[in-house]
Image (cartoon, rainbow, N blue to C red; front, side):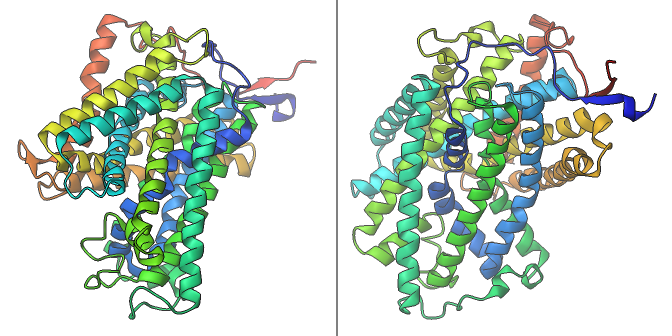
Length: 507
C-alpha cells in the first residue's frame, strides 16, 4: 500500500476531560499569560547587568542566538498542543511519546520550576517594596509579612477562575510593558540629546549584532547561560489549552507569538541600555558596576528620571513579579491536575471547583508550598533565597528537554513525509534537546562549585546545586514510592504510550 492510500494520524488518544471551562480564556489572553510569565521587568533587572558583564556590547546578538533553541522548543510545544491540547503539557506528552517515567519526571520538573520561580519572584518583590518604603535593612518580619501577602494574593486571584485570573494578568502585563516602554523612550530621548550616563559609552553600532565580534567562546557561553533562561515562561499559556477559545492549533501558536514578542523586547531594551549606560565596571552609572549589576532597572530609572526613578522602577518590578507568579501558578496547578487525573499523584489534586471550574486544591497547595519554602529559606539565609533564582534553570532545562524529545519521538513516523514537518517536528526539536542537555550539564557542573552563587556550600556542594539539582533528583525516589503505592499509571494503564502513524484511507 502506498502513501497515496494513507493519511497521517497525529492526534493523541485516551486523554481525559478534567472539568475545566472551555472558552474561558481568549486567544489574546493566552499570549498575555506567556508574556507575563517571562516577566521582562524583573528578568531584565536580574540578568541585564550580568549578561553585559559576560558578553559586553555583543549582548543583543547573544540574546538573539540564545533564543534559537528556545524557539525550537516552542515549535515542539506548538505541534504537541495541536496533537494533544491537555493541561498536563510536558507530563502528558512525555508519558505518551516516551514513557510514564519520563512523563512523570517532566511533570515534577515543571512543578519544581514553578515553585522555585515563585520563591525567586517573592524575594524580588520584597526587595522592590523595601525600595518603595525606603528601607535599607529588611528585618525578618518584613520578609514574612510581604511574602505572605504576595503569595496569598497571587494564589487567590489565580484560584478565582481562568477568565478572572487571565483578565488580571492582562491588566498587570499592560502596566509592566507600558512602564518599560516609557523608560525606554526616556532613555532614547536622553541618548538622542547626548545625555548618556557615562562618557566612555560606545556609540550604537551594527557590530553589536555581529556574532563574530564576540570576544571569546567563554564570553558567548556565559552570556548564553544568562540569556537562555530569561526566556523561560512562554509555555505557561499552553497549559491553558483546554480552556482556550478556538482550536488546539490556534492555542499552540500562542507560545511562539509570546516568544517572538519577548525576544524583541529584550533585544531592544538591552541595546538601548548599553547605548545609555555602557559597561565600565568602574563607573557607578554603568550596567556592570558591582553595586548595580543585580538591580539595573532601578539604577537606569534613577539615573534617567531622577529621585523618583527608583520608586517607579520598584513599582514596575512589583507588578512584573506579581503577574509572573500568577502566570506560573496557573500552569503548575493544571499540570498537577492532569497528573492526578491520570493517577500519577494523589487524587486530591484532581479536584476542580464547581463554582470557578479551576483546580483550586492544586492552586492553593502550590501557593502555600511556595510560601513555606520561601519562609524556610529566609530563616536560613537571605543569600539562599537569592540563589533559588539561579537554581531554577536546571528544572526548566529538564522539562524543556522532555518536551523537545517528546515531539521528535511522537511525530517521527509521519514527519518525514514532508521536509517542513521533518524539520519542525523532529530535526529542530532534537537540536534543541542536544543543546539543552549540554547546557544543563555545564550549568550543573558550575553550580556544584561551592564558590558559585552567594550561599557557599552545603555538605561540600554549592548551595545552588543542592537547591536546583538535588531537589530535582529528589523526584526519583518520590516517583519510585508512588509507583509502589499506585502502579497503574507507570504500567501505562491510565495514559497509554502511542506515536503518530499512517493509517489507510477509508473508501
